[in-house]
Length: 175
Ligand code: IMP
Image (cartoon, rainbow, N blue to C red; front, side, top):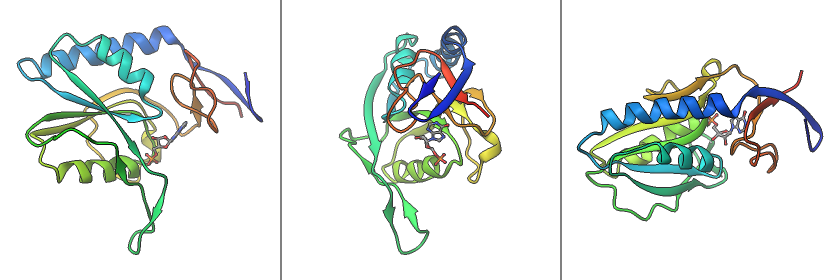
């Protein structure tokens, strides 16, 4: 499969993705029984995962979509992304961040820090993919779909240069 100038090969089939999401949702249904969690889906990449995860939840649940700005320079660490689009008051809420992929973890660490300051009652992460070998920030990821090697992937919401999000399966960059 060619996307723009790169070749990608099949990596995770839609059926496996859906089975895994259903298992993650079952855990969330149990863990959040009696609560009404608020899913915070990080755009753009997580829109498909968030939709399918939500469809498999049978507890009262809400969803809101957030986004991280493109990189902003800072005096200290160099580059950070800023949280934008959060309209809900999340004080006292049970939050679950829904992300497509955690790579180095830097983005997630920053997001967790920003959200923690707003006083949620609990804060957990659901990520479809985790490139555990790429970790630079160790994060407690409660709900992980697949641990994958340090290879670039596209499909099921994830893009290569804006394209490939529409694919039902996930593909990895060919060697
Ligand atoms: P991190 O801060 O290194 O964990 O980067 C996380 C972000 O990088 C994700 O939210 C994605 O937007 C992007 N990203 C990392 N790896 C991939 C990949 O293999 N395919 C598509 N996007 C990726």
